[in-house]
Image (cartoon, rainbow, N blue to C red):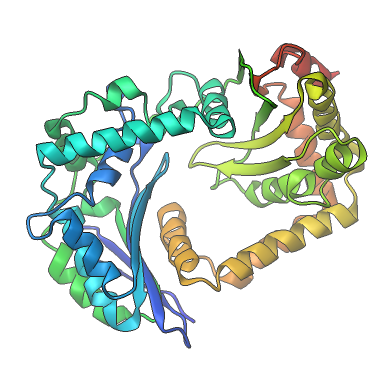
Length: 420
């Protein structure tokens, strides 16, 4: 399997990877613009645009878009993140041209009719309401806001209801004109695909697009902070974060191995110590999230009101202890889990297309699997211990608490415990 690239004269990038033996393909267009690119008054507009993509074009109604893909047994979807908006489909081999035509149509020819805007506005407001009713969703938004206050990267993807309620057609078109230029688009395809055929079709569809206005996202500044809200829930929800490696940082692999060792599975430190030995929670995990210029190692758990204080302090103690006694066996297990997750995931063409787009956006190339595996294998226990010491030593935790959390320690208490 080999990755092939092509760039149109206007900067539109195409990256493909055939997967012999597959009868299906995944393809889509990833746009390197998302929540981070919004002005304060635009918060939520990137996600609103994602929804509007399926509401009709100059040649297809919303029903036509859905039926075009589903009539051939495929599926089409989209998502918005803080740095990316993606529109993608999975279809059988013979239907790749159809999928590319539909995706290009929703990006190049949207109508944004007023009645469709109002319909979808209602859908998004329901989505916001559902998120606010889901404690283990809302707590991560709060954590992000506390880590990066008054910055685009700290705001929610969905946006506040009052903003979403006011977006106009003109504002949607303005955001598209500014951020949906061809130089910010990546067409990625994997599975039963033919690179040359996709390039020929893309040239017809996208070569006339004019470059957009050059824009740079506001640099992230991690500060740390705390938000706690008492509510009569069954569980106290706890989310703690420390700034960690960005995805361009050489430490990114160490950060991911560290997070895996701390809370990546049933054998991880936090799971074993807090759930298995002490029975303080049902769910607990750690993850290393990364952006272009920052990242966060995040720990989440849900527990009872009378155990939130113990869970919080033990979590911090385990973060500190990792700097002194992380074992070779724990490091090796985390590396193995990371490699297995990568390799198993890439058996799916949708995951592979996602990786093609993400790596192209980050590096301008797609590192080979052996190259990535080599970098994971290079992470040893000394590196993990050093990394654990460095992020705990920052003494800038972010903390979000929700539910019956009256007995939970403050972020200042946890900070003091980290550096003691």
